[in-house]
Amino acid sequence: MITPQHPDRHQIRLENVLAALGHPMRLAVLRALAADGERACGTLLKGVSKSTLTHHWRVLRDSGVIWQRPHGRENLLSLRREDLDARFPGLLDALLGAAAADPAGPAPERAAG
Image 1 (spheres, helix red, strand yellow):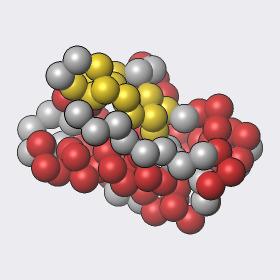
Image 2 (tube, rainbow, N blue to C red):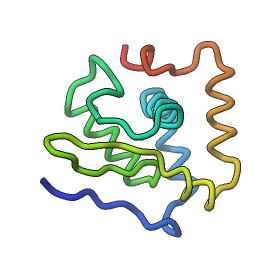
Image 3 (cartoon, rainbow, N blue to C red):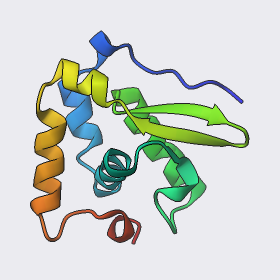
């Protein structure tokens, strides 16, 4: 298995983070990881093809939003909260608060449909 590349903290750019989180499925992943901590990639979005999941994980990883690490036959995903809070103080809390306040927002069970 190929080990994914992650940007260093100083390489994380605001426009990449915002672009990555501008998709409802990826915003749902952010909410789930913020609430539950590290999760296996196959447990986050149900009913989504493997190729689509792979695309979303790559966008989130390459933008610096998540850590992705191999664990056996699957990957574990976790939020890079420490790095994002250091680069953009308050951004994650603002995004999570806005997503939670939006009744039509992307809860993980709604985002997969």
